[in-house]
Image (cartoon, rainbow over all chains, first blue to last red):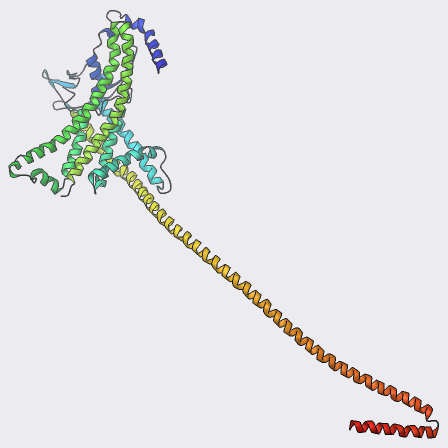
Length: 340
Length: 169
């Protein structure tokens, strides 16, 4: 470990002279850290992979817009490189808007953005993995063979979620187990894919509030559309002293409505914070480059070590958040399935 | 702030893609895996229970078997003892019978020997009589050449014979 640190230090010091004396007017000298970080955690119409010299390598994803005034528009995001294509320009949030009579009007935008593309890729990955698993079980006799390959890898996780459903929901857990499994693996896979820093990973999907909101709403509707009479009785007319009767339903309904909100925010904030922390640690190197070798050298080591630490922490958080979301969902469903 | 306002386009795609993913996995993915694993789990549980039962039955069988072996051994030794006694008795009886037989044969032999002896004596006696007659004849033939001597002897003989016949009668 000590030797490794020395090598790391020597490596960094070797690069010092060139970066320690920034030439005037060089872009790295006044790097805009917030915009770098927000461009990494936000969504965009193209998937920027890397820069080679001056040339930027990116995947230009299709833009799909429906404008009330001019109808459907489908074009490559490459056409927006200049910042304008026909009547379409970027607004201050980086979204495409249409100029109608001098005012910015946001069209109905279902473009395949970086997040949508990542969502498609990860969903395809999940689908392929679990259909392969299911295929193994279909083609083999489970009573005479133990699973191999992908089935052996995924079986413990699937059974973990399945048993969680069994413990928290009760007798009709089989109805809910597929949803909980899907939610768990969707969150888990996207969390991990988000940690991978290069293409096809790196999209901040589970740190996007739209994604976590849909997941939380799925849980909300599952809970409240399959609730038993007992659940609604407890919510609207609980057995409490008379003076609490008018207050309790208000509190209960409010808490039922808050559950999806808490699920949304918990997952979103955890993953977003993780991404921001890792990016900040990496950005320390670029900030410190201006301050001369004495500070830049040691701070780079600190940055790399903290970056590593946070990456490992994020791996832990990635699993924990998937687990927590699934467990809370199963507990909420379990509460709604109680039969007096 | 765009970070905390859900984007409608992403919402749209998420609903479609997640819905599709859920539909496909709930239909062709997870239920197959979980039902198969549960089937295997129940089979393992059942075979464990069966194994325990079989073990209990086996130990009962082993106990029974050892009991049977013990009994068989006892019986064997009893039979052996009986056989030895029977053998002894048989030998004893055989000895007694053999002795009796031998005695009988001896007695028979004795009787037959006595009879043989009797008949042999009779034969000898007859032979001796014939011999003595022939000797007497020869002597007589020589002595009876003279008439008076012969007559005298004959009368003497007749007397004697009469005497013996008297004695016999």
